Length: 297
Ligand SMILES: Nc1nc(=O)c2c([nH]1)NC[C@@H]1CN(c3ccc(C(=O)N[C@@H](CCC(=O)O)C(=O)O)cc3)C=[N+]21
Image 1 (cartoon, rainbow, N blue to C red):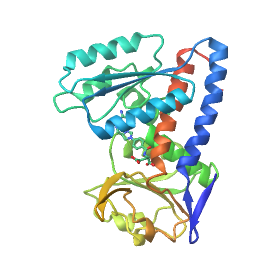
Image 2: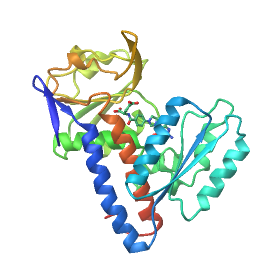
Image 3: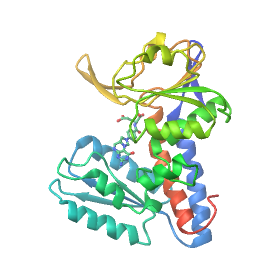
C-alpha cells in the first residue's frame, strides 16, 4: 500500500487504500448485478440540518453512486417525531430495493436513537450498531461490523502482514461504535487486548506496552510521543476540529509530530476517515449478497 514516511515512520495512506477498496467494490457490485439482475441499494436517513452531518451524508451519497449502487437519501425535518422515524425504518426494512439502512448520528435530542437503531432490520444494519450485530460479532457469528473499526482492522492487517496473532493491542476509548467492536475484532484476530478509558489509572504505561495502539477518544493531542512504544503501529481515530491561527483544521487524538519512533501511523485527515465510508459501501455489498444468498465476490 502506498505510504509516505516521516523520518523512519510510515504514514498509512487511508485515502488511497479506501480509493482502491472502492474500485474493488465497484467490480464486485457489477458481478453481483450480473448474477442477480439487481443493484445493491443504500438508504441514508438524515434528521435535521447539522452542517457536518450534511457533509458526511453528501460524501456517502457520491461514493455509493460511484461504486455503482443505488443511493436513497431521506432528509427529514429537525422536528420529525419518533413514530414517524420508526415508520420510515419499518418501510425501508421491507423495501426490496434497499439492502443497507444508515441513520446518521447524532439524532436531535428529542429522538431516542437507541430505539431507532434497534428498529432496523439487523440484516440491513450496515452501521453494525444493532444489538444483534454486536452479539454476533462478539460470539464469532457472521455479522455486519461497525465501519470505523472494520476500516482500522483492514489498515492494520495490510500493514502487519495479515496475522495479528499474539500482538498486544491497546485501545483507548470504550464506545459502542469504535472501542468495543474494535476490541472484539482484535480478539478474534488473537490479539491480547487492553481497553483504556477516562477512568483508567495508568493509561500512558499501558500504551507503552502496545504493539498496536488504537486511539478513539476525541481529544486533540491526548497521546504524546512517550506513550508510544518504538516500532508500534498507531491508529488515530480522532477527528477534532480546532482553530490554528484563525483557521479551522482537523487533527486526531495523537500528537502526530511526536510519533517519529512508531513503525507506522494513520494521519488525520486521510487515515481512518476515508476507510469508514469505504467500509460502509463494503457492508452494503455484504448485506446485499447475504440477502440474495450469493457469494460476495
Ligand atoms: N450512523 C452513522 N454512521 C457513521 O459512520 C457516522 C455517523 N453516523 N455520524 C458521523 C460519523 C462521522 N463519520 C465520518 C466518516 C468519514 C469521515 C472522513 O472521510 N473524514 C475525512 C475528511 C475529514 C474532513 O475533511 O471533514 C478524513 O478523515 O480524511 C469522517 C467521519 C461517519 N459517521
